[in-house]
Length: 239
Image (tube, rainbow, N blue to C red; front, side, top):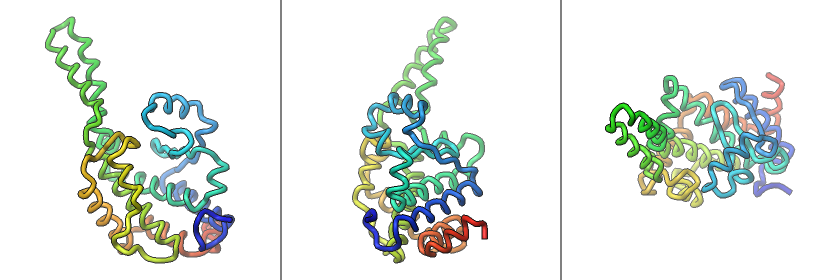
């Protein structure tokens, strides 16, 4: 039994997943961890109370660390988690193009402005500082164009990898319908209020990933997904 695919057994896809982890380690210093054994993730889940299923349904990436819900689920459903990890590696690849915390600011804006409300504590110097309380409005679910754009890259990767797992090129138009809910739902705090512009971005980014064989990391992901288990085993041996 597998998880909905015909190309390769679960064991073979575990090899492919391990090869993808190795790619991430060599390129970004990737660390794979699991929420089931993380007190920090339990605390974060408490803060993100509005994200239903944070601990057992979502993968979380902070810096170079990726937390999957459980190790058993990764081993049982390696094809699914191959797609998820490829998605996260695109974020890491994209972050290289920003200086310092530029990527983090881009991803978290405008909600990242909310802590500036603490400047209101300087009201003892001048009551004008009380206007900083207006920064609390940043906590509302405003559109987050930077985050939406970065996730468009991530879900473009998800889309093309799923096609590659079926052994075919991406057809240029098929985007799984559940992806829309990631943008206008609460999973990412309603980062986009309109779907069609986002859909257009995903199509463009996925088309680039499909066609550009000079993009080393994306091309390597494709080779792992389509190159068969022996290719994955060669990667793991460093051949």
